[in-house]
Length: 317
Ligand SMILES: NC(=O)C1=CN([C@@H]2O[C@H](COP(=O)(O)OP(=O)(O)OC[C@H]3O[C@@H](n4cnc5c(N)ncnc54)[C@H](OP(=O)(O)O)[C@@H]3O)[C@@H](O)[C@H]2O)C=CC1
Ligand SMILES: CC(=O)N[C@@H](CCC(=O)OP(=O)(O)O)C(=O)O
Image: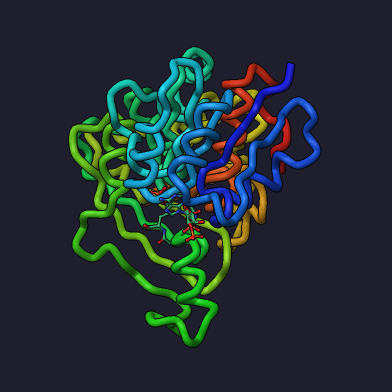
């Protein structure tokens, strides 16, 4: 049976990446709108209601509007925007995050695709919180750097077009300095901690790629978990996953550095534990492609689940 798919916002950065991953898959049939129709409400409404699964690659307000245009109880929705990530009635589209998350996704109609930064943060933190190795009230911080495609077409123009109104030549820019980035709520809710993490994102002069780091002062924790215990818990949490991998501790010891390009243009999520047992300190680092497991790869994985297909079909692993 063919599953009919419509990507609303299909001409944008994430939409185009999803289309590439769906090419050559006969079990899926894509509804496309012409350039003249792609922002026309009536044409979008028709496509949104004709599809078995729609993937929203839109700004938040347009994503909410798209959901309101669906007038049937059959079409399933994957929203790549921030609009529904902590909303009632939506299932968080991170199949590896909880032991039963894949089952929940298979049974839902409404999937909120995770944010790119939360994907790295939650992959590192959630299993450790669940195992009691990070206390619920621990003052977590998360430092991250993204490729500029993370900001969509507008940010790509900012970095690539000298005549763009906000064009920049910078190599590395720290931002979200008001400490109210839109990803913080989903980090807290899905991480299951009592307080929001302090989030310090930055954008670098590279098209794609992402490093997300959670440093921990283990020696200040009452139960002072070992570096090995953290690594063991992460390894157990993702055993058997084809998408999320935990690099061996010895590899971490021999690596002098880690680059933003670590995961390349892939849908992999690679986790590292860099620790010093004597100092009682650890740097947990997630490497991913903001456009891969951070956006399009995750959407395709969720599409596969909703369509009852093998979870990794079409992914770049
Ligand atoms: N880029 C990334 O790494 C990630 C992005 N996301 C999220 O995915 C969503 C899409 O992001 P991204 O692809 O980067 O953004 P882009 O700006 O690259 O693309 C958005 C697309 O939506 C179109 N659009 C805007 N408003 C409407 C509307 N009312 N009706 C139909 N189409 C519309 C735009 O049209 P036009 O081409 O005319 O501007 C554009 O093609 C956002 O919510 C973003 O936050 C999530 C994770 C990572
Ligand atoms: C570099 C950059 O600007 N990144 C974006 C996040 C991209 C993203 O993941 O947006 P969603 O919330 O839709 O997931 C930002 O910080 O706003």
